[in-house]
Length: 289
Image 1 (cartoon, one colour):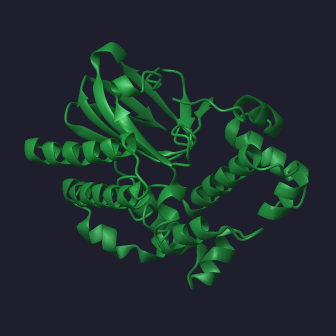
Image 2 (cartoon, rainbow, N blue to C red):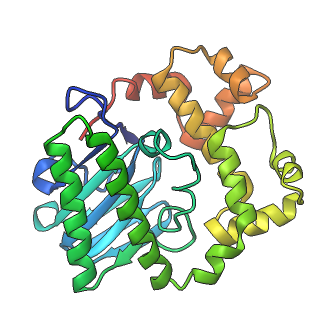
């Protein structure tokens, strides 16, 4: 499976956000081959029909809608590339985490993490407002200034928060969204630092609940079990270590709580279908849009 990496040196300075229209990203992959990215994507789908297969969910694409895709989500497109038009904002999680004290911000967004489709339909006025905000972000990126990072942080947080409110209304999540603090706290624990060797039961104990109850709330909030979330985050950390550090497999295994290198290798191959060495060889050089 292809994994597209974020190009953080594109503008001759470290910048963990990018954006533009379809013409600015001619290499944006809209093919039927399964692929993923190591960054978040906000796609304003302006025109063109077709489908997006996101994990095992088939999402119908229509004009004036927003698509939300978190990192490492497997996807395949079924669209005619020449007939579609879109604007896109790409960003790494680190971009917001280095600015916000609350690293739970993105995890609290049901548009990225939830059991409903990562798709928001907008009316004419909502589309106009969203497009204007997106173009402001894109223009700021194109004309970088010394204070652009601060401006881009604020603009992106506002845009995501606005879209999240609309998403909650569209899927009638207001009550549900406030009820599952337990599952949100669990995701925060995973995002702010995995604990070496911890199981779901260990995290549940720290949260003052049972593994069964934690699983129930995770399925209700995110559509997956607590174990799925833990494995997803652990896989994300393994991939990051392989691609962005010089740590040996033993060092990665020790860091992430695998008792043996063989356990790490089996875990990785089971979830990705690849060996760690094959993954690093294929993706360490990076594929960029």
